[in-house]
Length: 212
Image (cartoon, rainbow, N blue to C red; front, side, top):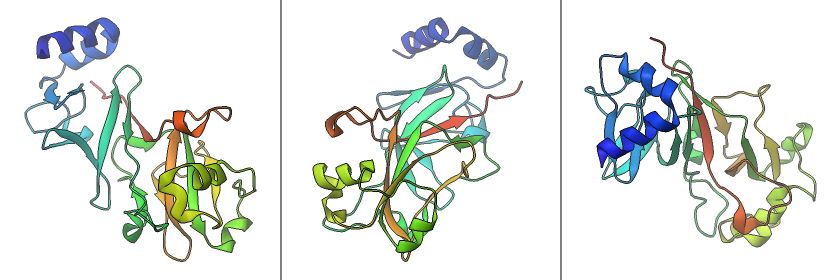
């Protein structure tokens, strides 16, 4: 099975895999159903230790700067991307499970950043958010999330906004806090014409190519 995965990776991403073979350590073995392509590393004997991910109980996970683990849903080695599962919004509340830690935060000296393909919804916000350039109007997609999606019902009727995570913004954090916005979720490659049941929830990270 591992040989088949490696064959497919070489066929689909030949340049990336040729570079990987020039390093001293091999790619890591699969974690559950997910391949762990180079340079991602689950232990000291494979991959590149700067690109650390974790295989916990056959679940591939990413560790944030605040010590929270986020499940990895997808890895795209051809485009140097991976997608994380957004934190849960606690049932019958409008608080993300990582709100006590300030939301999602990346170590700035690691080769990962939050990609520009994420549309972020901030929920249960204070009125100070209205001073920002974010879309907090009645047409914001966060209104659809609160109304149509079960997880968002605890946020219904509260001030919310959305924004596209572009290159002008901090690419290492999605901030929430008590007294600001207390919950968030994120969509990857959101299409304004798509219905809520087709939304692709996730936090897409991009990693810098490993240098030989």
